[in-house]
Image (cartoon, rainbow, N blue to C red; front, side, top):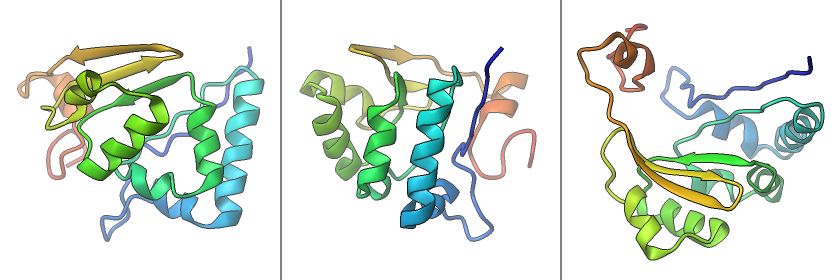
Length: 143
């Protein structure tokens, strides 16, 4: 069985900055991350990354390669600037963009290869799954 995975999962440092953006803004670490992403895919792995600041990440040509080498993308609510960039790079129609503009938690777009699927899947706050999955500061199992 071949499997390898890297997860940035929107992790935050103590000052609240996005650690994936921190890792990927330096040329050397960005190039290394891109190479690892490609190799993991080649070896049958499923590399995974998450960030809240797409605009910052896509300012790097190396990171654009990560986006281009991803079969599956999940987009949640996006800020205006990020939404414009993603719409252009992923060829999203105005109708599809509506699903990532002021989207509620649990709503967005799933993109698999050329299929773009809107989804609504809110998780009730009073469930154990919400406690595990929430990314809201001060909520959840780790707070």
